Length: 140
Image 1 (cartoon, one colour):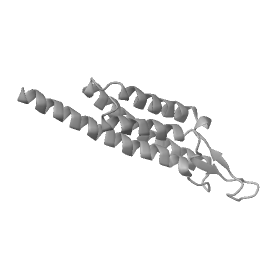
Image 2 (cartoon, rainbow, N blue to C red; image 1 turned 90 degrees about the vertical axis):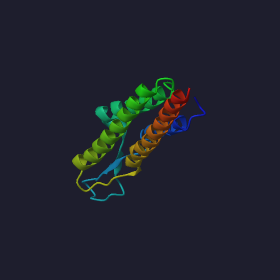
Image 3 (cartoon, rainbow, N blue to C red; image 1 turned 180 degrees about the horizontal axis):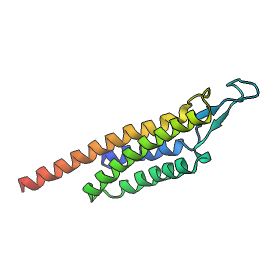
Image 4 (spheres, rainbow, N blue to C red; image 1 turned 45 degrees about the vertical axis):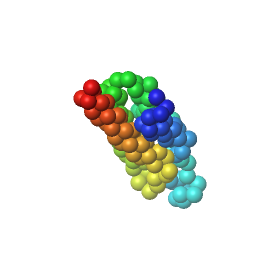
């Protein structure tokens, strides 16, 4: 299980998704001062949909690691993780825009983006394993 590179990629997906809990993904402009320096960051915990999606992203990545014997299900879950991370990015950008037009995007948006990239790399690794097993079965 740990010898496969997609295990590392899926662990990195879970790590990036968990980083999203701690980093703010947007800033709310303080209407009293009009300054961005006194802003409060928008966190994932403030939006229940985004919170559930992020927890699902972490759980999905960790569950996918242990499905190494069922590559078809593993690829399907990896595609689901890709979709979840895109939805997570979209909700973060939408939440930042809806909260304040003058606010800014913060580093928390990068975490699901990195999770998306790592999920693509995990999917490619799973496909390579599947192709290798099919080639070995054909040679027998």
